[in-house]
Amino acid sequence: MPAFVGLDIGTTSVKAAAFDKRGELIGLRREPLRLMNKEGPHQEQLVDDWWNATLKALQNLQADLAGDDQRIAAIGLTGQCPSFTLTGENGESMTEALLYSDNRATREVEELLQQYPPAYVHRVTGQEPSPFFILPKLLWLSRHHAFLKDRERQAYVLQPRDYIGWRLTGRMATDPTHAACTLLYDIVGGRWQTEWLQALGLSQIQMPPVLPSNALQGYLAPEPAAATGIPAGTPIAVGGADSLCAVYGSQVVDRDTVCDISGTSTCLHWLVEKPGTDRAVNAYPHVAEHQYCAEVGLNTTGAALNWIRSIIGVDEEDISARVAQVPAGSDGLIFLPHLASGERENPNRKGAFVGLALRHGPGHLLRSVAEGIAYGLRMRLESAERGTSFRRALISGGVAASEWINQLKADVWRMPVDVISETETTALGAAMLAAEAVGSEIVWNRERFKRLYPNPEKAAEYEKGYRAFLETEAAMTSQAGKAGE
Image 1: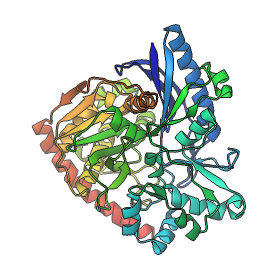
Image 2: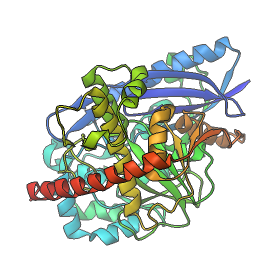
Image 3: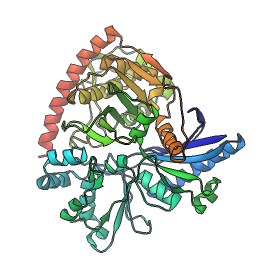
Image 4: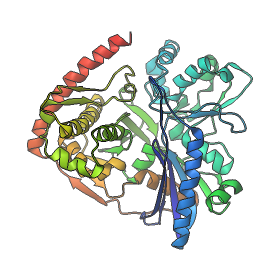
């Protein structure tokens, strides 16, 4: 039986998930990735870890499938972005991987905006300039790494999906969703802004060719085939960015649904006819051609929950019991969810517990972190042009397995929440693109979800907490702005 694999190079792990033609998960292997949390805003990973974890995950998945008489028909790629590494023409790594949560390039954003007005950059790229994106980090690297000062030496920008695709097939490529994460791609015109690189003194930087998300990048090369046991020549599809693959895997086709893709970070996406002018909202090409997705998000959501859980020493299975003992609003304790050197729109912002008192215990800390995340996401939705005028929220990703968090979001956002039963929707979206690349398709029941409705009593209590959160956020943002001056 044919199996279609979605290979997801995430922030904390590489996942290889296999699906049949009905979209049923028939195999899953996961290999951890290390985070290099340096002092200050630097957030990096080892590029070799991406590759070694990929080979091991695919090897174990292949062994599982072979035992069940399943054959891998194609592999689709996805991953975290806009993380990246620089490689030479032969693929040798010049840097470790700089993660999306790396906020070192604040000065470089200011310099970029002196040359290109923010409204112009947003109109071309769909993005509001910030250290979150790749271009400012390239400017930072050009000052701090000798190889970029050598104008004769070419350096290729490869995101995790791009790097793994190149190692698997021997062909460099990316797709429009990843290209849009660079701050160097005209998302409507579909072209790299190479003239920007020239004007900024980055003429040696090379961007990979852009292929459609459902195109074939190539075929599995002999070396990784021998390492994984997967036959050489297995088709490899380009795929797309992790959150966009999750939207595709969720099969959202209407514009009244906001998609919550929650893992280490959270992206909120909704379909739009064309990129908008609202600079509080980023826009990306969708993996489905000729469509676009709007996006807002938070960098540390699942990461924040894991952080507080590890500090308190509570098993994941015990969290719901702990928070159930704490009332909505966490007895006045407020958490600001900015733990990775701020957020993309304000890198100087810090995370905080506000209102901490002796009456607060571990359950309060856990609940307030989850509430702060829900509040922060609602604030970003309300900052968009359409506010919270959505009919429903559709939740997928690793955090979707937590029912109490899903109910919390329904209460805070005051809208029905549909939780997809298949939590590996990012990998599913990549597998769907792999099937398309070889002339097949995955068709699954798009009604496979559980609906949660807002609890009116708790929603009213959370409304008070949300107003207090907004006041605290405004005060801390003002303080962060002064600190950055």
